[in-house]
Image 1 (spheres, rainbow, N blue to C red):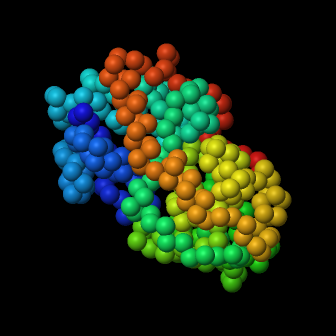
Image 2: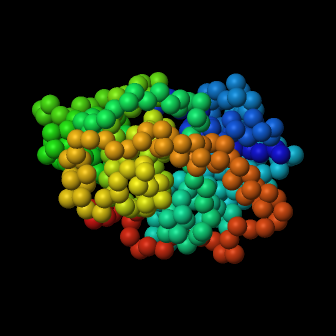
Length: 320
């Protein structure tokens, strides 16, 4: 199959970039399976080493660069006027009233539901980039926050508050929190090469988001190292954070209480196993291939265009 992707950012990304990582890993896996993959994107992207052909994007008229023998185009935003079979993945939350292509998939069951759809593919990570190097840890003392710290929906504020209250250490990767507390440690934006060693020193990931989290790649990154996740129940999190993988908290009080314990009852190997079975690039790619086949057979994924159901802005803070 000849598949074309379009993304104007530089791939692979070194620091923050959830969507960029998914595109890169998906292309890499498709090549492994024998498909011919082309990226129309930044001339600075380095994708040839994974077997992907690069067509530098010169201007906004990138659709004119699509090779004539392309079977399918896969984008990560809605785009009108593509004259080839076309799949769209939406990684974020749409705005009230926004509509999407009939051939759109979302990244979790709940994410699809709030956009009036039931079509989704869970994100997956490249297991080669996340070897299981877990150092056994039996206590709860060191916690990780792995998100854009300045984005209020990610709720760093309650992570800091709960860790201070429980005298637990919070390590912030994704921004800085200016405080004199000896329990709060900020690292700014962390490169991938530094992320795994940091994660390996942690006892759990804190993810008490206050929006409908579409997926949460940091959650499965934590799973790769056997880290349990302490989350809110918004968006995809009740699908991802099952009892063997962490604790879903409905209120701040439950979250604070969850961090108060000293013993770690979670099995790191069991958490890693769930990642390998459900959230790898191999699993993700096989599901996308099923959607590709449907589209190439002439079947639309939706009878009508998916649309955001809620009248609220996706960044309006939900209760916690």
